[in-house]
Image 1 (cartoon, helix red, strand yellow):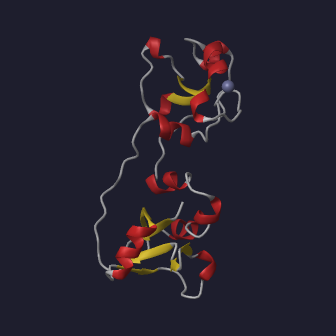
Image 2 (cartoon, rainbow, N blue to C red):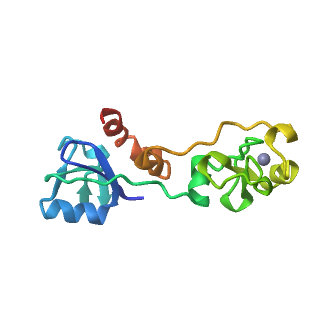
Length: 170
Ligand SMILES: [Zn+2]
């Protein structure tokens, strides 16, 4: 999990990259440490090299908007691997995807209609709406807006705590 947050030249987060890519950008002078030089605690240690956990491009770059792929893994991450009906957390392989408005009745394959669901709840709900099945959704499914904020959920708190302030600022 040795990852680095990349900022554009205006301090806006644009990507998460590997420490290797970060090191190359630093060596080529295309990026610089975005944090205080003496902030050793936040640095990533690889062998004997210290790499800043946030770097900033030294040149102007127009970044295209990136849409989050609609796929099983991302739905599970959005729902934090928690069944949206019983509220219990499961390993990925024990979760299914549930169409809130049933697929058999032409419920669409969209972010707003698909939730993580354990096998037991899925069986219980069957081809019914939550209301018909008398099952309450933990929260309404939604389309994640910010790609990077979403990607960050996959990384440990110890790493992203240094990244968060750049999101608040942008
Ligand atoms: Zn469940």
